[in-house]
Length: 633
Image (cartoon, rainbow, N blue to C red; front, side, top):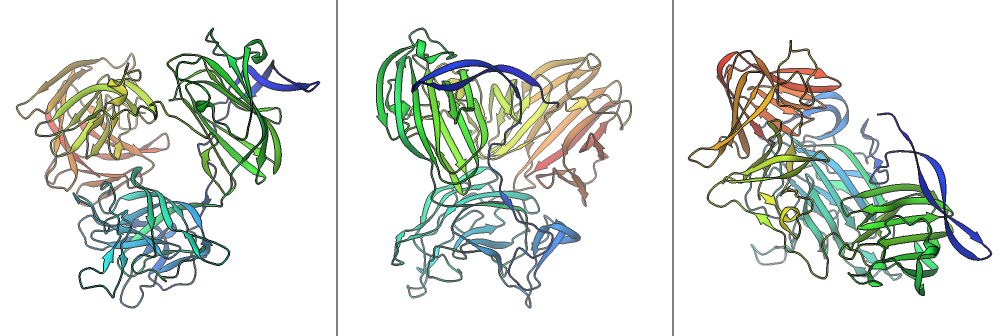
């Protein structure tokens, strides 16, 4: 998409005769997409040069495939980009990254083979477990994402292990699929005498985008660590002797104890009884209070029923020269000016679903600033203001912050649980960042869930575990009317699921158009409480339903029945890559999930490339037919 030049008003500080004023000038600006995080350092996997010398069980490959049915087995092809461990009796050393770390944020993709086992040791001492935990109902510290237990070999037999931490939920995928890990680790802290003053702790561990640990303290090194002696800096270690495992997309950020200082600051509070959303000239508002301050704490200065504008101005003490990223959400309006440049412009009417990211280069030392928070409406309250910088972890610049739900009166989430019969719930849903209005979610008793866009008959998500968070639908006014799947979900392509193509090379239509005569017939419930959805497209009658596939630990079978006047095509999936492996099985979107056609079925799916993406299609013939396949993740 081409960048569009847009003209809008930017607030600029002009200092004259020692008096601060805010004036409006007309400025041209190019709209740019700002990332929501500063850049990571990526570990190059062209060879093993990023690691200390090790044994031959470690190698760099171009592709790795783990058979879902074969224990501890990997097949690979030559190339680069993937770190693969295949230990044997002669070669099974651990692998050490060739730099030391203290506080670190680490992300990577990992693939487990069937029944395999490994571990990531922060500072070579504190282990996050890697394990094939697919389908495990009650995860332990020894399952994937677990913080492994400590070990006292002098203790009574059977009581040697202690302090292990199981993940909150089992978010593991099937063996042979890439799984994403994100971990924020803080090293132990020591005084000038070398005495430990604070234990190591895992601030956050996420597996497949699901939070499985938060603020877990580790009092000492875990079992099988390189040393029991704790230190402020040491290298990351990956276990090499337990089983085959593959890694890719390894990236990290190293952190130090840095923050932006607030100095020589003044707070002015203005009355805003007329509910002015866009502040054009703040001096025209009535000034009611002035304070000196060494912190930015707007939500401590006003009450929930106030209609006021708070303006902070003074100096920011920038600890290091480099790029800084400001992350803002506000229920009302806000803007930030540093050294006469508008960094954040949310001068208007925003809510807590609008996040703005703004990156700027700042020089070390003092910088003048003006931060304005506008609360024009009585019942609207909320302001979050985060910053991230060079070797500086993202944190809130505000002494107190809030989200859309007040911390003083926390709202208990409204959760829909499936018990002894399926649940069906209509709502808005987000799919790939876009809100869809005609959606339905279904929770099965097997703890398998899925959602559809009824407007087009499109599958949106599948997920397992708990069903749906309805808080944004039913709390207070239910302003956003949005249901939220609970647990880690797999997103489908979101385009039309069915279309008439002249041939299998025609481009797939993204949305309904004048050439597609689509009619939603509705849905009906069978005796088992599971709905069947029906629609008509260009004279073809199609019905589809879903059920648990009990032949897999986690699988959802889709059954499509049709009575067609002509053949149509069904788009099952798309992604960066789709690969066919044996037994009518396909790996989708760079190993995100499997599509499995049962043996003996007559369906003949094809893989094609369309507009830079691989697509998996199957033709549904003229006449009466049934097509089925399973989604495995």
